Length: 453
Image (spheres, rainbow, N blue to C red):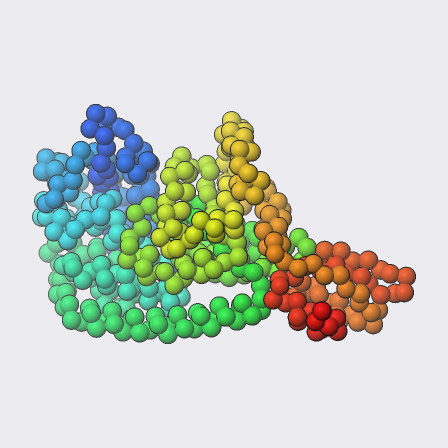
């Protein structure tokens, strides 16, 4: 957990979480005739509950147990039916539960009513994800975005034992149980803080815009990695860039975007961007808060959609990612620059691997998924070649003769272009075939006195 150690209050929050006895409840709508049927989302209830457990573990809660609560309909007052609420309340009392995590989106009224029924603190899926993001944010921009989303979430709720305003960062605001001293939610103070954060974020956006402009002028193509949380994006990023971005088997291990340079097979340099993982039912407030960051994905030259094909809900996870990209404004014509990366091939048994290999062959060549393992390195050379092929579309191919004494010119080409071929001529000059972006044509011709024709 080195990414958060050293942050003020981290040790206190972790100790507090480890002593918070928590129950995770999955109140999922299911078909009436078959209580065990898949939920409307397309996911099996147990798989959804397992994901909720992963979210709770991400903030070090002491998990007592998890329980499915199949629903035929949502009850306006408590989300659960009165009988199920009573049943859970009895379990909370018997097992000395401090916190009940409801894997759904609760209204403020439903949350308050459940707290009364359970006699314990209640947090919903949105609040839990906000707490995880509060723990993961490392950059100033990330911290501001999370705090803004957290404040917007809290505006309509009773704020109990929430010290977020005092320490100006995310954390375990929900862990204060009933009976503790409570901070009164002063809407005016919260709104003032929201306004200040929005001003700061505007400044950050301007700075980000300048950085983006600088990168465009470089210019190196940008390849963005997106995918469901824990799909192996950071492991892939590390393998390709030899970087050391946090890559752990936990949800939302990466929050702040990271950029690193990578060389493609023919020498061209790209900027690889690792982004925050997506998740089903991602709070709208968080999508809005991270829009400026995520919009950089849409402007990328190539998008790698990384999927964990060893996961039983891989298809549903892919649908969630596509839905969020669609909400951000990804257009159908942009699909030509998306490569679907089927990751974690090392975790597949032989039958599953053969089935997926056969399924991949059913796609057109330009849309065929790439089977890879970020752990073993399987398929990564082919992936880089595919990225190079997409970037080559609409790029110019030039053939240059470099004088024997122009060693600097030859080095310049290797640094700024894709060198496709190099041949030594009888007169001592070197004939070089390069591929460049159209916007660099004038620069190359000027550097080597080729004229503008």
